[in-house]
Image (cartoon, rainbow, N blue to C red; front, side):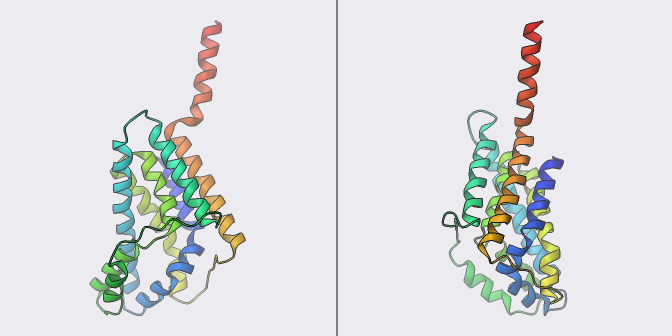
Length: 215
């Protein structure tokens, strides 16, 4: 479980420049409301946790061998990272009415409105979030999936908060930066999936079996 959470945190931290480029303006807008930025973060991370629980549930009901959820998660991870790197069109799954819902609550000065706006913000099409969702699929458990995506969301919090407060600006608009980001997330994700599914132990098991048979 620790490698999985570590990969989710790395994905959030390393993907922060992409988050700032995509959602920095939203964070800055929420920061104008006293307490609005924490409420926005809470809503966003809550949505990520729900998505993680759904992805973990899907991984748990996938029929077939025990390694299949990990294989599908790796395939999704490669697909989304390729989109993030600009090698293929980035997958986008937009919910109808989501933009209208966000606009409705964005300008309201209440903490509840900022919370709801953050929850809607968490559903915006984002290749980085889709890449992170491959981890809950591999873990095949709704509770662990929710925790994994919550940790991912916490990893994006520092940079978005700094950008919202105007202390520093981040950016990942260049193609080279996006490809470097995609490579890091891909490596961390594949390592976590392989660790979770026991792929690293296959060689050890095989070697142990061969040694046992030769005795």
